[in-house]
Amino acid sequence: MIVSFSVAAALFVAFNISVAWMARNSVPRQLLRQIDRTRGVTDIALGNSLMFSGFDPDAYDRALAADPVVAMNAGLGASSVVEHLEILSRALQRDDSIRVAIYGFFDFQLTDPPVATVSDLFGNRAISYYAAPAIAFGAAVAAAGNWFAQQGYGHPSSLWWAVAISPAHRPSGYENFATFQPIFLYQAIWSVLTGVVVAWAARRFALPGERVFALWAAAYAAGGFALFWLGIGHLPVVLGLRAGELGDAVVLVGATVYLARTRRMRTKPFQPPQKPALERDSPVM
Image (cartoon, rainbow, N blue to C red; front, side, top):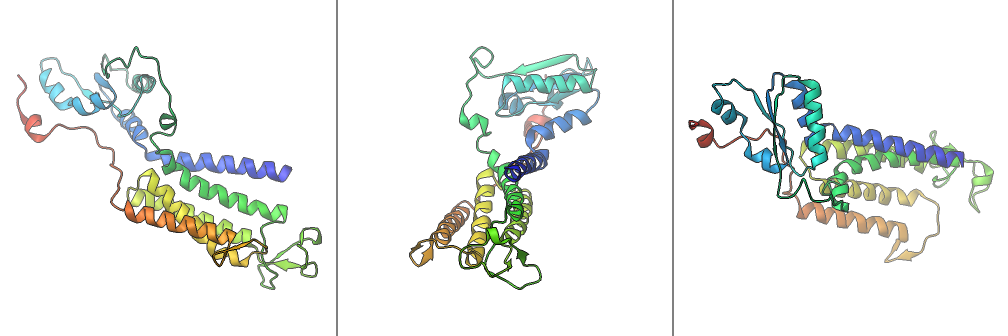
């Protein structure tokens, strides 16, 4: 039980560390860093996409040139009233020169009761962007935990990195063998490599959450399919493959097909909102 608890705790810690690392450049955190870097702001605009797209700080500053102001657009798309309040609180803590807050909202957003859905909880499926690497690193910790539980090993082996298995944990027919293939070690190494590659690919190619998760699923299934032949087991054979191999093959093919069909999908980087050049350069009456 101690081993199970330790593995579960390690998975929880690994998941949170991975999510924190992957989310460090999310759009809300980029906005907060922009707030932290900016000084001397007198007027701040808050709200969701209505304010994010519609408020031009440069035009606002020129319109109030007689009363020098420094405006900042702190609008955040797909955000709630609570988030707007948190952003304002952060700005007031960082800059005591703010004297005007301009707030824009949709329809009855301030008066309607909040409605929480599963899509809101998962950030419009963006959680998969962070969850995929976290799951990979968590799987590595779980695989390494099999060493303590004396599970997850393969066929007998005399290799120098083979692991010794106690007689009580050896399967029937293998009682006379002392060392076995450490499949759990291979799985742990593969999971770590998968997590690193998936995290890198997500940032390098601006992949949306669904594609990040599909990439992890494809890599996980490929590793499982490749390592399955090292294992000891008597699973039923379906279509010429053992049940575990067939499952990995289905996941691998499905994830690969999805990645191929969605290869043009990209996420958009965070940029402060700007008006078109024609509007930005026109005089304000």
